[in-house]
Structures are given as C-alpha cells and as structure tokens.
Image (cartoon, rainbow, N blue to C red; front, side):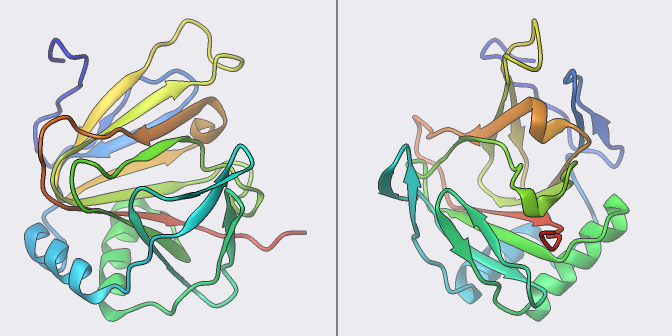
Length: 213
C-alpha cells in the first residue's frame, strides 16, 4: 500500500481476496483469456456501443450521470436504480464473448451487464451499493475494466461494519473484480474524479437479474 492509502496488487494469474470485513471480494489483476487484447477491447467497445448520458434522481433532484452508460441482457432483465428504469438491448457478439470469459473465471452465470464509459478524469461514479431487489438477497457483481486505471473506493456502512475505514483499489486494464456475499449490504463503492488527466476507461459490471415476486 502506498502513502495515499491505495492498495496496489501486482498483475498476476493468482486471484487475491481483499481483507474487507463483512464482504467477499476477489480481485484478478490480469486475465489472459479475453477474446482480444484489453486496449483493442477498449477501442471496440467505445466504437460499437451506442452510449447515452442518462438522467437520474439523487435526493429528489434530476441530474445527468457524470459518465456514459449502456444496458444489455437477456429478454426481461429490466433494471431500476436511482429513478431510472433500463430495458436491455440484446447481447452483441463481443459482449457475449466477454461474458463467457467472466463466467468461466468466476463460476457464476450472468444474464445482464451495465456498461460505464469514463471519457476522461472528470467522469466518475458516486458512492452506492448494488442492492436493488431484482439483484437478489446476496448480489454477485463481476466488474471488468479496460483502459485507464481508475481507483475503486470502498466505504463501510457504519451501521453494519464497525471499526473499518475506506479502502482504495486501482483497477488495472484487463482486470476482473468479483463482489459477492454480503458485500453490497455492508459496503458502498464508487469511482472518484481524478486530479491528473487520464484517458478513457470502459467498465462492465455483469449481474444476474431475478424476477420480482
């Protein structure tokens, strides 16, 4: 860990389990079985995906998201968060290939994916938990990153995790982060703006949507 508090994990084939109390988080700093090189995947995703800047509601106020997004999945995998309801576009061949790698590495099956395009250092994602009802009681989120390194910040929910501080993890291009168990109930996560200029990044968070009862 460097003086800024960021945890750097050297690229390697072995996954690393993060020491977050009340969470189940495993980080693969590098995978070698992506369908194309990470920089090629970044370029292709930026060019092929019809990105949109959506309006969400935060504390009752409408705001544009500080990044571009897209939602893909099986038929019927509608997803709602922050006052925004997303109907899935059908899987593209490239997204199917990436999903196959994620499922093989994680051992989980995913029927949808939220894509986020961080255009530069000004784009970000606020602190949140992926705990919407359609994600089930213990959501499994597989987060894939291509492009510029951005830091994922974990913050504990003070009413659920005692004596724990924030945790910062720079996510390498071509990495896979798997969040499972009670992670979404006990922790929030987000991506801050950067002070220094940086290039684009595309993040894909694979999920499993369950029909509401």
